[in-house]
Length: 337
Image (cartoon, rainbow, N blue to C red):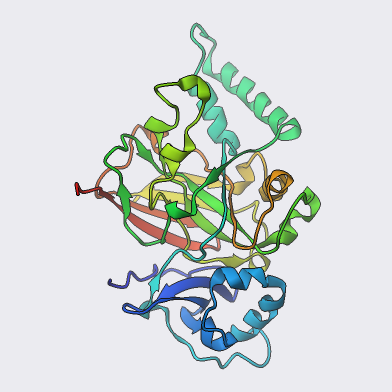
């Protein structure tokens, strides 16, 4: 398989990030990627041929100082052998055990949905309905809980891989999202301490088939996230895991998604109703978060349903988040077997 190089723009904030790479004919391996776009094979540097990024995250407090040193941000290991990033294929940066996804978490997005789906007979001016929705969002942020559901690791694909649109998918849509990567087991942690359990951040595009979100045969049972979100490759992830210490404020990052060069989503994580700490804490109240797990924090306004333009064969999606790099994926229609 040919190497799909990373974009030429600066890849991430801070001196280094984690990645999962492979040579064109070799196995995947965990890598430290430096800001000057060079690679250290962490199997060699840390003396473990079976090492993976997830195993690194399982020992994150101990490993992090060594990674700083390998990146040249400390003493002793800055001379580790490095190769140009362009020689390698970039895969999804981690294989998680659990994926937690969030919906309805951007204020402006949910207000737009509220206004667009007015009740029959509601003839009030849009400004009045928008003000009502804003009041509901303020109350929700103060009093309510995040909306989180479960995704499948098998839906994850690399940040430059083609996205296969299944033949049954009638309305495939994009959803760019900031994603927290867990670095310590977390169960019932408080909001105040939640970010201590986040090793780093990455980018996810949480694709959704809008036509299958609600069951047509039995709509009263609610949403069908298995069908609508978990086709193979429906979650392009990466390219990097940027350590949390390199991201000054995860609640002040800009997300931009372009479709064939045209900007569709452009919003700050400031607009999140529930910030990263509240998301991580909330999930941990029910589930035990494990190292390498992903917490997707929702997507802002500007998806395909908003624009009346869904994904189709040949579409090119470019997604970026401040300090986390960029991913580029092309849509291809599933071919009949």
